[in-house]
Image 1: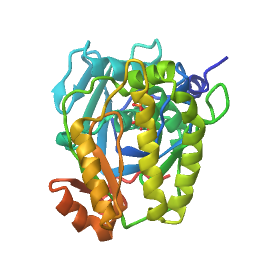
Image 2: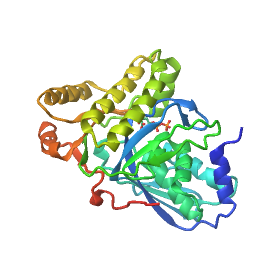
Image 3: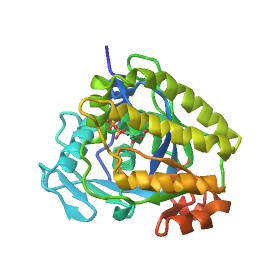
Length: 339
Ligand code: DP6
């Protein structure tokens, strides 16, 4: 069985030019309906669809240019050793495009996410790198095609090609051609995200290892794919209705179920700390008093809240120092990549 993405790149590269400098930006994203579990690890195909909100100007900016001094990778202004994990991943990804050809490249990547926010940058990193490589080689790839390619770097990167809400269709084809991001054509200007930083220590498991280990060993995982698919559809419907009272509880339940599958893995995969649970308890108490804010957590201890602008001051009072994001504010989406 051929790989649809490799075929896509090979075809596009037939009309590639010699690389020219090209810079691309991509936003990070937070899944409201989680991707957790792969049906094909080699092609990075998910068991269930997922849906995210992009984080505006928080993301990655990556420049790809020809290099006269062999391959070079820089991160946040610093040159990286060729053997470092980031450099190896970035160059292996560039190899998808240049194949066996000797085309030395400079890959210069910057995170535009405040490091203290403790957010993963692999989604925006691979989305920006895909666009930068495509631009450098002068390829005529559209965003859905680049989303499929970014998927080979990291699943969550499929959703980082666009601003706003993005659904990653799981697809059903064995070769993976129908598994890519699809932007939802709607704005929700009052939508807000708060990031409550709990801990920035390195995580015990990468999301990939934690996911695969959960699929392999958790007896609770069997119930996840169907529920996650149903949640994704219900979450999309609630977003279409700008209905936070329906959306919030669904988002929170979906995240907690994902963490429950990990908790039952053997041994357990634990990302949430006592502090994460303390934040959730405070949120629950405030909700009993009328605060319409809801939590979601990924492969790390930080807690992200979703709510509408009318509750921003209350969230700020409850969690001083929380970082606020207005994902539909034009000032937060100044690198809107439209097409
Ligand atoms: C919990 O996209 O990092 O953030 O495809 O193996 O690179 P790989 O995994 P990754 O997993 C993200 C998991 C998550 C949920 C989500 O973003 O949907």
